[in-house]
Amino acid sequence: MQDFETLNKLNDKICLIVGQPDDLMRAMMLILASNGCEVNLGIDYSNEKEVFLANSILNESWTMGKKGKIINIHAKEQKSIKQNSNLILNEINSLDILIMI
Image 1 (cartoon, rainbow, N blue to C red):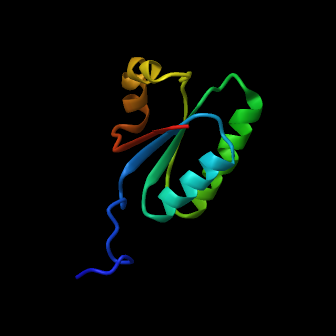
Image 2: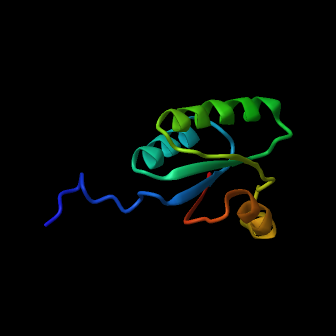
Image 3: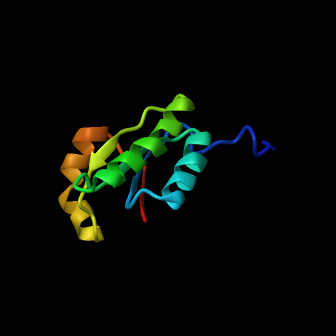
């Protein structure tokens, strides 16, 4: 039997968290990145404060050796994610986990 510390099914998975950068996005990014995920953030670039917060959140991921990106996504509802799917895949090449907050 494997112990929990050696079993890591999130290792090397690519994640996209879409939403407003806040403490919830930061907490989710920290959990996923500390478990081996490459975390990308999808935010609306039109809000300068949100861009600053997203960069701050992603900097913590970079300090863990994870390379993530910030993607400009106007996603207030799920159907806009489908409309942006080609843009998303052009930016991050692959996607294993999508979280909308």
